[in-house]
Length: 310
Image (cartoon, rainbow, N blue to C red; front, side):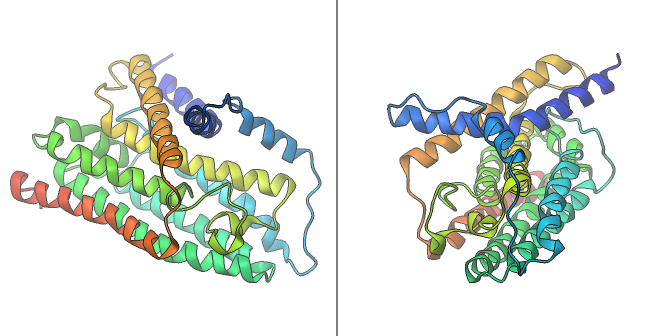
């Protein structure tokens, strides 16, 4: 088996399993802070299996778009994972400016999610869709600025090459922490985690992501929950690639092991955030998301002034 095939198989396995494992590590971390045993690491997998066996209940006012939307969101998440480097400087599908395809695939998922939420005519879900659009408008420019900064720093244009090659540049140590912190904020925003959102809340007036899937049930709810886990895995993989010191093409097994450990470390950090601080008041959330843009802006300034990349 050649290296590309081996890494592709590992990438697929990590992409499919990590959504369950990351949620499990986050929940166990929160349980540790609360001096509780907590659920099993793969409890979310058992929850999804239970949902798949249930018959969905659909509102009389919903159109076929409501049920179709859940599967479109899931397919978009799976498609984006094929372009995202999880194990280092490697992705199964890679070409010049492929990060644009990833961003637009995630954007399509966001639009379909909002449309399916508004399809049932619930005011709460419409409110959640409006908040999703607003916070997405803050997060997406920060992601593009981050990718543009890394591209200018490395002179490369594919997702995997940009993030994987950044460690070979002279100013890597100056920009790695701001970029990793910005990606962590984007993870919390896009995956609906504390302090941006609370996936366990039952207060409709404060929900963002959860309020949009209130009327989903059965397999459709399972698809939505797994898609949210995929998005969290995507951003955790980006952070792991940014920090991974090993080249997967030279040492595939070692680089993959380090990447998995780094992603689990990201889950521990997210769990600590959720244990040590409360969800931010809604008017403060945009300012927190803007912080990702400021951090990336600082990294861009370093690249432009120190390295001459901009």
